Image (cartoon, rainbow, N blue to C red; front, side):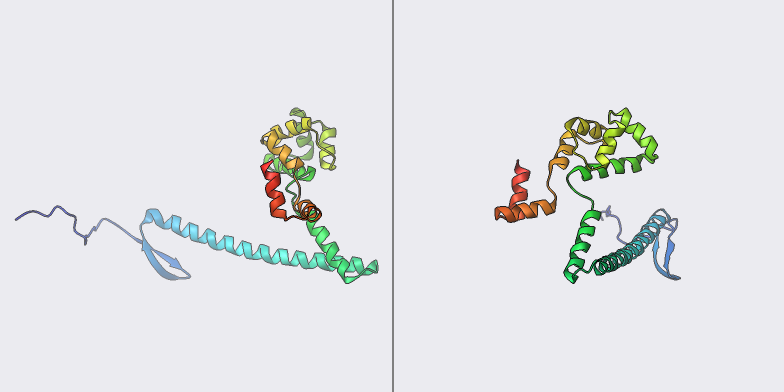
Length: 199
């Protein structure tokens, strides 16, 4: 009779131990010790993240309502119309959004870099100066003035990006500008965006 070398499907290992995983005081499964901690930690982090997202969503709704009320009060004081409330609200939201293009977008990149370095304004001015972006140049960038190619080279070194990428950010169009230009030219925003990207 031939010996069967295939392993048996049903096996018994008295040296292997399992520990229970509990959820709200009820055992929901058994797992080996090396994986149990990782599974529990991952699930707990996921639940915490979901709770934080819900809080953030509620906070954003509250901020929107507060801004809408402030716009309503301002327009009423100035004797405006209800349509002006929505227009003012849109203007404030647009100003608050992080821009994708233009000088303000570069300013945000500099602010991000300062936060990454976790340094004060004074230290950041010295840091930028060491990369050949003078304090006056930095003030000009934060003031929304035009950014020269020489400044772009210095800023690229500061934020750790390629000068070509920063030039595209500086010279690009915002969604609003593309939308206006598309209306003037009688084309769609998608066609216009594709045209600019192909250049």
